[in-house]
Length: 166
Image (spheres, rainbow, N blue to C red):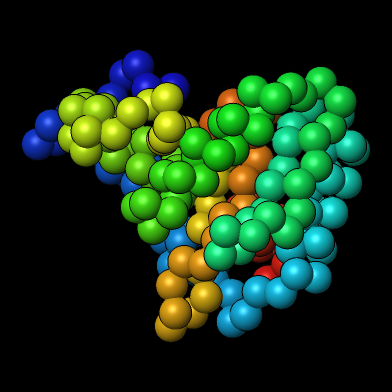
């Protein structure tokens, strides 16, 4: 996917376009409020989709440090829980999706360690964790999927939020 790209000012067009798309999603996919029941509804949507598509994923929804929904489907392991914690740390630290942060780092040809002195053992700038953003308030939590390729993890989460906000 990223093999043949045109560089402009050190940033490939594909990265630049992806960063814009991810930023746009964060601007569009915002809530007016977010309750425990909202977490359950979104979590169950993701759970049903994963069952229907036979996806081995772990789903986590956390608000203000409180885990509101968490389930691991068959085929997952404790490693998925670790990935979720590490992706969530990216969202909470940088106030953006873990996928956007990872893409920004790739576009800059750098790492968390080099740019921010953060350990990849504790932080994972890989797709799958999306901020729960309250309009006119900001980020209050995360909706995270782990178990698929990072773009697919991210897409599952954004699809669930889009469906919920309809």
